[in-house]
Length: 136
Image (cartoon, rainbow, N blue to C red):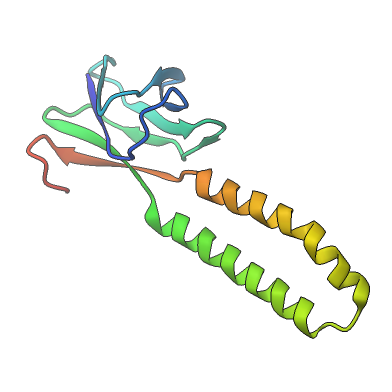
């Protein structure tokens, strides 16, 4: 039996947990899934179309698998996006070619779409924690 805890804040039907290839919608904070006791199992978390890496665990008693966002990856992608936008504005400001400046308003909606994609894309981490709630 696997006990999963959702610490991401996502409660819609797009948030799914894949255990040994079987998809489960995680609409609540806790989810319990039955697996064979003597075999290891694979867990993957996905939101919409993107997915986390596959994690392999061995069944243990009194352990909860806590699903959370990987803040470091989200912050890195956001920093890279901001640096790219800053570089584009610097090039537009110092570049004397009028054609490049004319394309800036056309390129701006693509930048907004890319930013929204980065914000929506979720990177997940699964940790084993004891049922008492302390992180290992």
